[in-house]
Every structure is written in structure tokens, then in C-alpha cells.
Length: 90
View 1: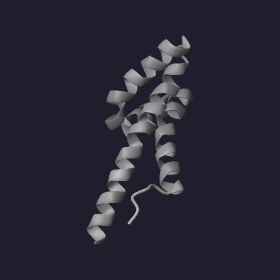
View 2 (view 1 turned 30 degrees about the horizontal axis):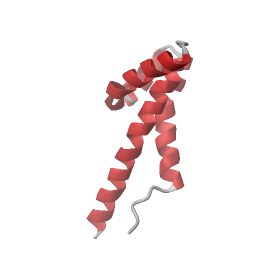
View 3 (view 1 turned 60 degrees about the horizontal axis):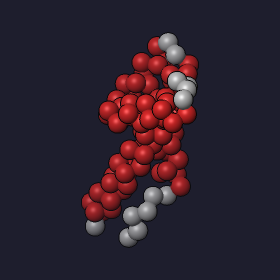
View 4 (view 1 turned 90 degrees about the horizontal axis):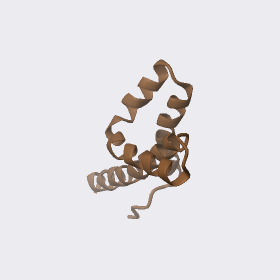
């Protein structure tokens, strides 16, 4: 069995990663909802956002840097879930 992620699984990880930046751009109560949904990944998303601010020299880059870090963390989690699911079927 191949353990490569399908396009749909990568798209789902990308959609999940976009929850944080989009909810922060909209603001209000939706911002808190986005923070709660992505909470497990925010520990490493914060340094990623600050790195983006340092590289691009703009506070606007924080949201997108944090979103990228969430995506980079969601991919291995999605891959592990696929591996465990395949092992459970065997």
C-alpha cells in the first residue's frame, strides 16, 4: 500500500490551515472560533508567523506565516492518520 497523500487529503489540510488566517482577517467572534479550531498547531504557528514578519518586514505577513506553519504541521498528521488507517484495515 502506498502511504502518499491523495490530492483531496492535501486539499483538506490546506483548507484546515486557512481557517486561522481567514478567521483573523474577518475578526470578531469568528477569530476566536478559528483560534479554538487550530489550537493544537498554534504552538509552532506563532514562531512561524514571527519568522515571516522578520523576513518580509510587515506585520501583515504574520497571519500567512502562521497559516503556512499550520499547513506544514497538518500534513504529517494527515499522513500518520492515513498510515494508521491502512494498518487497521490490514
